[in-house]
Structures are given as structure tokens and as C-alpha cells.
Length: 280
Image (tube, rainbow, N blue to C red):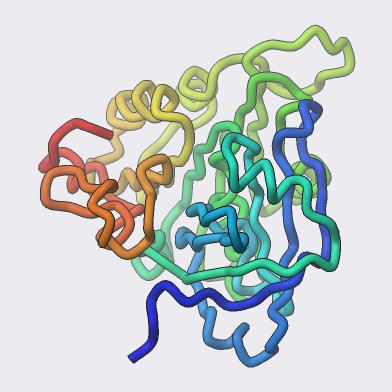
């Protein structure tokens, strides 16, 4: 029987500082044993535990897409002991990776539909995985219109800036990038909070599924916007990444009612959440 706590050893191949405050870095990891990459077969929406010997482990959403071979990527916010240590690690250092964990976005249900992606701040990681997955030449025909609303506090806090610009230039994805506020005279995108931009840019819920991942306050105010647009609760999909803990539902710190976010989630439909205590 496989030990669920045993991580795969991985090497840091690349580190990218994403934001102007330098608190968000993307780590590209490579498996020391190439055979472990096949064992770590994941689906967009899942997460994993990053571990550092003597420091601990943290649950982080997977930012890479399974269509990107040879590595797995995580974007990590520097907020605690493990993440501070990780931010000080160097290219070539070895650490642990446990997973993949949790469920994933409902890809079979999304095929043949319009897909609306709504994200805010640091929580855009699994949405980046999803966008790359859908735009892959082998997958793009499976989905109809893809529309993205992504916001951050200011331009310097946006993740994946080069990819955002590349997606903006494509004609098979509708990008609506926004910031809460900016004094940058060259800013050419939207200014305003994500729920308000969603209300402006998303005009129809017909044959569409919405995936939402972001800070709790963004989710709270975006949810009624989508309902007013006509999205039924079954087609509003949310990821409760803020509640992830041990990854396997053993520590008992991720439960909402009788559901364990690490094991039964982190992806839930709004219809499911309406049947759970409103603790998310």
C-alpha cells in the first residue's frame, strides 16, 4: 500500500518572480526520477503538497497544465515558515512534492460549452492551468467560446504577465484583464473590481459554465452577478483553495459540514455549496 504522506523528490529548475512586491514566485519543478512524472498524473483544478525537510509542507494549486510535459509548476505566496524558506531556495535545490490531491474542474461537462473563467489575485494558478489546457491544440476544439476575467490590486500584482499578453493577442479566447486601481498612464486594460467587470463583460449564460477562483470577498460578490446573468447553481464552479490543509482529509481542519475540502473538493458547484454550512 502506498504511503499517502510520501513525497516525490523534485529539483527546482526555474524560479520566476511574478509580482512587484516579490512575494509571489513561480517554481518550475522537475522529478528526480522521470518515472515519477507518470505517477503524478493530474488534471487542472487539483493541488499538491510542497514539502521542505525540517520546515513542513503546504497545499498549493497546480499552476501548470498536464499538456506541459517534463515539469510541474506552482506559484507560491510568501506568507509563512514553509513559503519563506521556499522563496529563499535556489535553482538546483531538492524538495518534496506529494499528490496530486483533491478533485478537479468538471472537464467532461464543460466540453461543448462556452467556458467563463473568473479569477482574482494569487488564486489564478489553477485557472492558468485550465486556460493552457483548453488552448492546447489537441483540446481547443472541445470547447466553444472561452472568456476570462482576471483581476489584481494593481498592474504590478498580476501573475503571468507575458502569457496574459499572449492570450490577449489570440482570437480564440476573450481576455478581460482588470486592476482595482492604477495611476499608470499606459494601462490599456480595465479598471474596476472583478465582480463589476464580470457584470460588464459577461452578457450571457447560454450553454456556459463559469469557473471562479479567488479571494473569498471576490467570490462572495461575483456569485450573485453570475446568478443574475442566468447561470444556474449547477454551472457555477468554485474552488475553495483557501481551506486546503493536509490533502487527504485526515487532519480534520478542512471540513465544511460533512464535506472535506481536501478530499471531496476543493472544487464544488454552487449547488453543492448551497447544501453545506455557509463557512466558505
